[in-house]
Image (cartoon, rainbow, N blue to C red; front, side):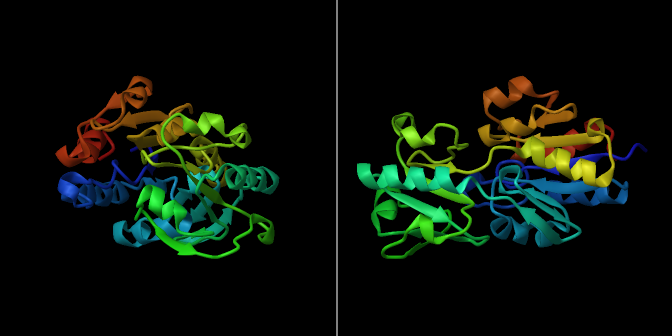
Length: 257
């Protein structure tokens, strides 16, 4: 069987949030096991920080990952790199948020914690996606690198923030944006280059707008049945919903086991 290199988004692709209970469907676990038995290369491909995504490596028995929206690479369970966003641009963003009274937060390290100067970000978002730590007097200049920022604004309001020009971002919450890399395809190509494998042998799986960047390469693109319309329009194959054996159905239909 031709060896394939499979890259899976996490939320909404491997993980179902059905009934408010995030979980990996049993059929997905079975598919991952059969893929490994068939000799394929498996990796996660996520916008999450490496620290936030790492527990899924252990849970799913996967050792490789493109994290941090394409800027992080983990191979064989070992973190190889995470590239930060341009510090000058991030500082400019924070300064504008400070002037305009826009709540903000930073992630200056590889962790599961978001730093905020006060409680205004939580008050505006009530977000529990990750732990928020209040650090009075928080100043972006004090950090050598910044991986991500979080800006509280409703859809469309980010256009009024001048410093956002040229910065990548995505929105999975109505109340705020993630200022983070959106370069999953770049990360996948870096991984494939490291492995000496042709890009055409990759298969990517996704469901949301932050997966659009990996639906641009010369590989097979699989959209979940629960994916947004924009992603389905770019897909080579649209499978069933994550809750409806979507991963297993796609892998079986594509002849991967």
